Image (cartoon, rainbow, N blue to C red; front, side, top):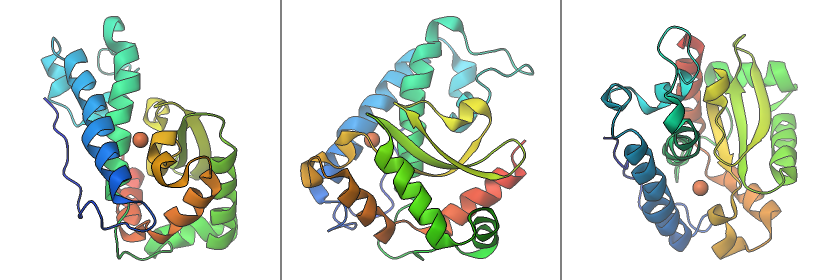
Length: 210
Ligand SMILES: [Fe+2]
């Protein structure tokens, strides 16, 4: 059984950028619901319960291990994706981390996007234009190059063996209580709470992932 990770800060810690009411319903209700349905799908598959949850998605179509059983593929994609993505999301924000890329990731972003400011512009633009529910992603692709794109619903970069370094939730449940239909305001505020030390740690994990 997978479990709901506690937030690594208080529910109100990301105010005013993300309000306490949104954090409570997003973590305690939405994330919990993804977790419950993910665990229910894995009930008869103890070998999948024993893995790192990210690896359940990473190995989804693996030729090395048996592929994900057909009867739970949809549930794994939707609820496993939702569980893993929200776990990642909480960890890559904080009330006091560095607000621009640091270390080797800073160099990689500058090399790929010309500057952090240009990366921020491109990422915000694609997150703003994503139609409907989904996530905007910064990933390491199979060549260990940085890429940005958005995916619908809880479809995961991990299914393509792209390692997600950072993701922004653009489902309405992530911002509607405070921002209503003003997604651009939410996307501007999110840069005030991203923790680039944590994102750099994921970058290092992704570089070593095989
Ligand atoms: Fe969400």
